[in-house]
Image 1: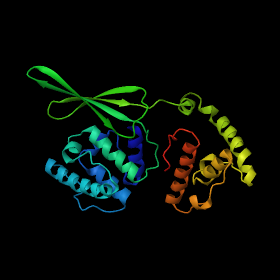
Image 2: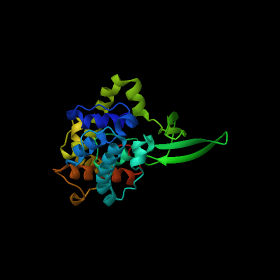
Image 3: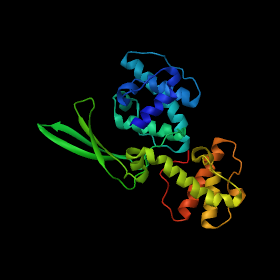
Image 4: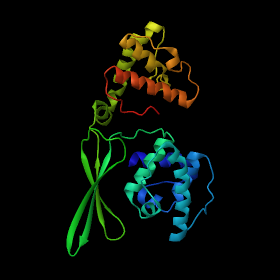
Length: 268
């Protein structure tokens, strides 16, 4: 949740909009309008401010139609609508934001294995009846710790949703408990990388910048696996963002071909 909130606030920093709670700040369409206009670099023909429920839903309808026009050609399944967003349904809002973040290649790291188990509790004839539904927000594989959040919707229906978090790895632990050791780890990785890239008269001094375009990743995989990577398979001097993403994606494929697990990070 916080990753998406921080992303929205970064995108809308020039608008001086600060989102604190997704369902409370996005339900009326105002923030969603500004977010889409910024991401898509287009102006929507909607009223800037509207207080009535009818006006808010009309704005939401226009905003969501614009979103659907962008997403549907790329095969996205629409799992939200005007009523669910305006009704502050957090699951629908999360589906919408994840789709926007993926479509516009947001520079954030979304956990890849997140599902939400929704428990809907209805009271009928004095008895509580429950229904369980699992919603995939991102790709689901190995799941770890579970956190429960209560959430109320309109109509007197009580909903609990359980956010299933992926297992943490050694780097997560390092960031949380020994951030002072990060520089030592980086130096060790640079030494390891240069041991191989020096064979091509290449040298790395900054991991963050020199691996960003994917070129060194591809070359490193070839050196480690002892094969030549044909130059037509990647961009040796990438110029655009898409070319850099292609290189990183290709490097990830080489890693998996070499027997490694799929990297947690997204190529973007």
